[in-house]
Length: 193
Image 1 (tube, rainbow, N blue to C red):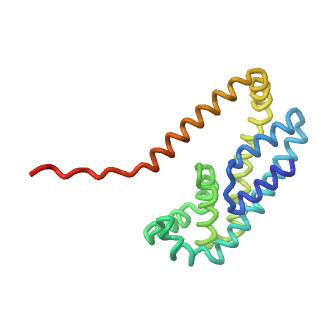
Image 2 (cartoon, helix red, strand yellow):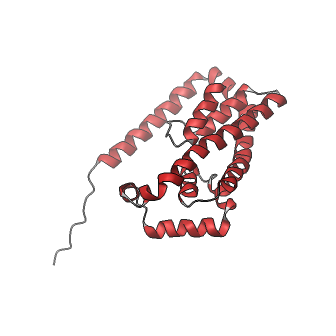
Image 3 (cartoon, rainbow, N blue to C red):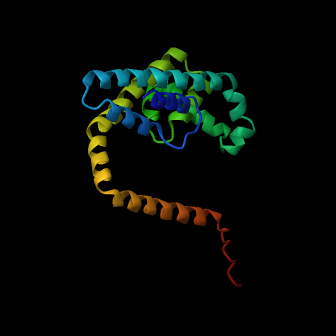
């Protein structure tokens, strides 16, 4: 259990991991399955760990985020002044709701934190918003881990061929995407005149 919480902390601190945080929360739900007190303890631990990890990224972004986004990193990430202006508008208009709901959009958890720090959202607002967002997110995934994961594990251990089938499908899809990205793009030929 401690490893899952540590990995959540690392991910929320801005370090990319190969497995999304949802998987760690599902694992915690599966580990605490059947025990309401263990589920509640896991839920509270997840909220604390996520707030702590995202606070690290928030503080780093608050200190250096503006310079980085307006410099070479911003160019690499295709961040332009108009995009920063739109983000400022969203945070100014919706405030905490931008953080609470924005963190639920796949792939936006870390960028929302970076933007909140860079745009100097007040820390108490940021931390409370992350806690509310995490409470809802982790409750869903913990309950899935508690209810669905044991059934899925029993199915997969009883039908090992499905693991091979799914792994093969994923490998084929990955190979297709890699080949597609590595092939040079063809430029359209000009029409004959």
